[in-house]
Image (cartoon, rainbow, N blue to C red; front, side, top):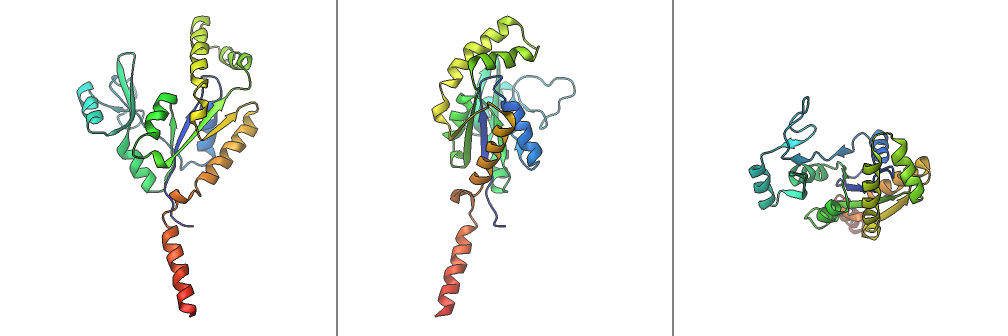
Length: 213
């Protein structure tokens, strides 16, 4: 098999559309797919380790990384910075390893506009209906009515960005949606830009043509 470059896989969706479940299934299907480890300025929680759950940095360190263009994307959430360091992702892509990003449309936009944008495969997950989306949120039993209402309001804005993605899947059946997701990833791994070894293959073929004369 020819050496390939890894994909930078972005999965986005409104909360409750099934993104996290699909991401987990994708990694079960191919354990070589790794999650991008984010950087943050929030302090570690008990049991968390630097480089495993997050890369923990001071605010000054984080701002310096942004200034040096070392972040693929970043945002401030509730007074703390979160972002995706570029170095580990670039190294994984060159080593032929796919990296999975579970980020919103704003983060996805930043990544697509980055120097690694040509390796991006972006997929948006839509719910089959808004009543079903709300039912899924309520069935979790984790959030209050107020939190669910906030999530539903945010979902409308998130869904409006669906045309910005390479692929859009309607998650009306989890198993069928996952099969479509696997097909997309398998095909995109064969994209011409992801197969640098093809240049040598074609050179060899041309040389074999010349040897026939």
